[in-house]
Image (cartoon, rainbow, N blue to C red; front, side):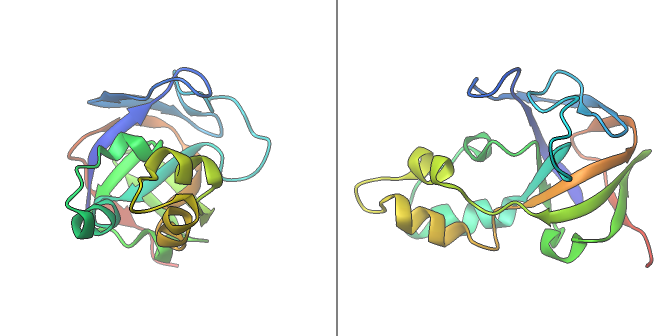
Length: 153
């Protein structure tokens, strides 16, 4: 259960950049990310997606899919993110609360659509696999390779 990749985008619509580490500020999100300091709704601070979900989507089509194309901040491996809705978990010193699933939208569908898989099919494929929206409860540094600890509820 670890972080496999980290992505940030400086502003909405900007390309994402893959980075090795980020600073997370409690209740603000990732420093330098488009959602930093925005709290329009719970779960806007940091988003997560499973590497396994990305691979499962791409494999049947023999498609290479860069995890950053999903525009989620943190790519995990070995973590069942759907099970973290309503739960607290930690990565290093950073504590999160899973708020809700990060369900797919038409924008995601448009980014990943191909002639063989139109937008509605892409969106359907990502339902309940699109990741997790979280609130950062305690800040700190996140690095690729760090392990998850799920708090007992």
